[in-house]
Image (tube, rainbow, N blue to C red):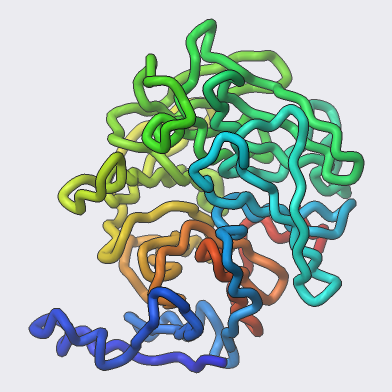
Length: 362
């Protein structure tokens, strides 16, 4: 269990080791989770009764990316980390929320090496009362299978690739995706991490953010200039797109390269981006998976847990586990935290994730 710990920024300003007086961790076997308030507003975001605990600590990295709930299956879908073996592809870890967060693993025939994902309405299936019937995965591909986007029915296990190229050119390794609720378009990032981890050929295309229409097949590159574009997320009013650049980690880790969140304005027709600006920088590790809450706060999985910035880009707090946290998933009244071998939960959470109403039908 954990209570909220205030961080004295004045003391921190002159003592780089100040945080060590508040938290400690065993990086080889993490067991402690803390809620750190960098701003007094943090309490109102997570709630004064929020508590945190560890659910699983495994000997393999089952909890890496994605984290998408499907109401028809009543389960949450997470992708495991790359195990460094083409004969042991990335698994999809299934978390049974109704059965004490028990886990199982599966793979899908059309999905080679999964990474990020989003809940997905195929064209013509969205109604005011429906929840998304599919999970759409970023498939990084491998040395044989092309990279792209793969739609999966979690109930039947049926899978199909809905995108495998940019007008004839190969993607590198699609990393994360979101579906726009009005246009139905899929926005996704394409990074080089498959090549960096030696399961994809050398890249042949620049690193972009793309917008793809499953209904018409239209695809457009909408942003470039990244070292490694990674997580992306809409603001709750869909006027802003946030994109992380995790260029600090490539074949090596070099923290003089980007570990940065950028914000873009979305044009009124929902098709283009303008006004690129630096939104925030991660002080530990790099910002990977992104989500917003309904108050517009931006949450990111970083090097020591989840970092939370308010809409102005002020760091207001952390869900601190002391080890790399690549992603997380909002639940009604809670958030699950993925730190690869560990799964954590913050309960009695006040913040409401942007996609809670859509995915859970509440």
